[in-house]
Length: 401
Image (tube, rainbow, N blue to C red; front, side, top):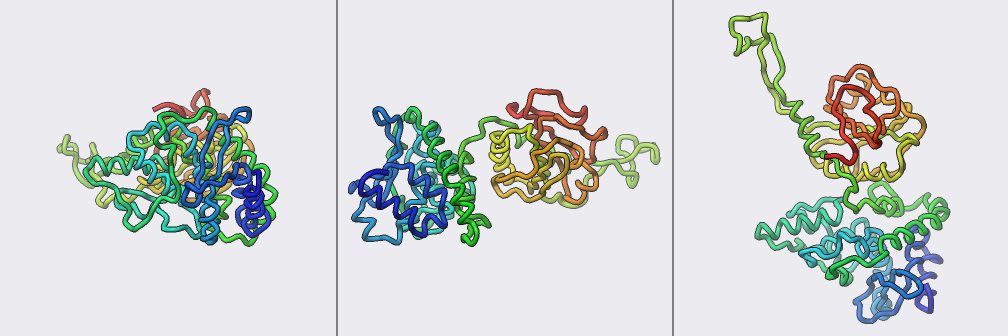
């Protein structure tokens, strides 16, 4: 940050209470070039190519407007940081869309999520529940819901009076700026590295959102808004697991309809008498050092649509089960990362205790595995090109459909 405005902004984020609660945010803001811009209502961000300097993010500030409404400064800064971190200004998927005005609404809802500071009449995801908006959806998921509503003849509108806080001029561009994704990555990486010490010092006593500090939520946003880089036919696999729960089973309590004369020899078949509840899917994640961090982030992106269809329970394991918890939309700091043993998660007692109807195991397959299949179906999702660890269960590759 340069000039008088840059000095004021640096003082605001580093010398006041802002740093105490938002250390990583403060360092992202420090990576932006602040410029006076009376043409914006309050604040805005942009990305431009600068001769001799590559790409730069600019923070546009209407100084007079901000001075009249100081109560909104914190919230506006968080909002603009979210635009940068979520890739709204730089990722190719946000350019050349058919309905830029709907994309702008989706971006606004995502940029305002987790902002626990005052904002002037913000547009929130809760305002679009009727079209299917839910917490932790990606920007593109929300955009597609808005497009679907329009296709059905229902023009999407927020349920409460609200407005976009800044212009999203980039949504009208046909192509993404060259080098934008890489520069965004550099800004975020630098902020994470430089802010780590501040974050550790400030974390104690910081108010939390969804049980986490604002900075923990910010780090989880990094990369989660991208569509999965590798596709796995999760929905089909899940349908198979649920279908197995509803499949007919053999019983000696009724005669076989195909062989009615062979009572006591051929069993009959029947369906479960009660409705099958929402399935519980146990997702085992091999957290050993043999799996990379990008692979772990990719798993989180793949799980989000599945959590809408089943109860998803995550088990982190290396040579033993380290942690078990319900999936909440992201995978933050996983525990373990030692050797690999595929047996503990598939132990019959462990599966019964979790009420698992099926297991999806993310692993490279390099470790000892049970010789006998468990009583529930297992889907092996192999992240490497090696052979399957067992001869039973269904096996798919991370990039296969």
